[in-house]
Length: 222
Image 1: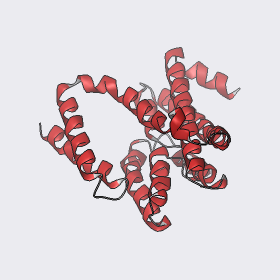
Image 2 (image 1 turned 90 degrees about the horizontal axis):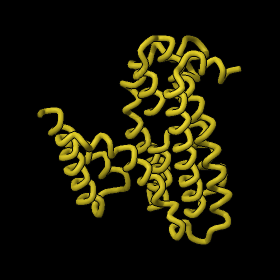
Image 3 (image 1 turned 45 degrees about the vertical axis):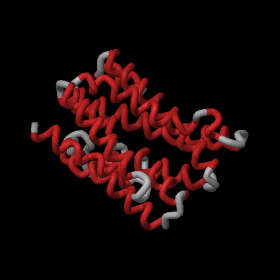
Image 4 (image 1 turned 30 degrees about the horizontal axis):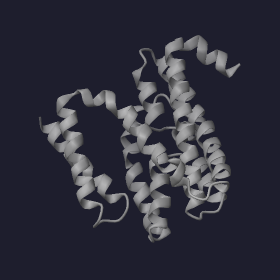
């Protein structure tokens, strides 16, 4: 009934695109679950994070910082810093999340994908439907992917042999390629990559990626 409601509001192309994004998140979740298992985390840790945090970038960063010797506090602070982009998101989709208790769930399922699909629609009804369909889809697919990844990880001696560690960056790269047709944006991305690679040997995990965002200043100024 819920699916039919969304289908009647959104066109087939939008529903299909949201489904593909949710599938991609499930695949990334498999990578995340397998990596967490290979790094010695108990099953409940990545699963709890996937349900309560529901933010892939900060979750990857959290387990990465701890695995490289960082404290849980520093890992949590790094994750909060990465998720600080959700602050402007909350203002942008304030009308889509609903009110009262519903808003609590609405803001919980707010992520890059649900915000993009929500704001990309034309009417308020379509925006709200796309936001909720994508958000709920990822809320279901992300933890499911983590569970599958944990199970697969228990049968693998080394997840790196199967390329599980490469799934997340490969998907992100694939999603980024269309935007790189813009020459200015491509130059900005290259500069950001150079900054990240150059600072990685000297800074804690996650910080080089944040520093790479400095390259956006060049793009904005131009």
